[in-house]
Image 1: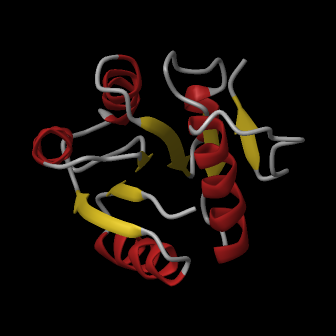
Image 2: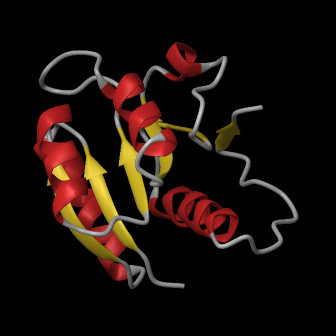
Length: 135
């Protein structure tokens, strides 16, 4: 299942590595954004199925509110990726869960597959162990 994915990450090397992993998995990376304003512009300019959102962006800890807006108002499926998963432990409305960084290619693949299956309304037996789901 191929998807259009937006990577929202302010560390250029991490964003580039994620892009390569996602493209190797057959997905289209529609762009990368280092801050909330750029991310929102990209979402409004193109169709986005899934956003991988870091919590701390170049404009500060704006990722949580950005994820909420993407998920609730703009219909984008959102997975957080952060080294600080405790910041979203209680969950964020409109988003699926959080993947802890650092992570590996397999964890990204299984988390993205899980999120896309949920987005499509397809049955999902269980979540990948690396993905902390929101209630």
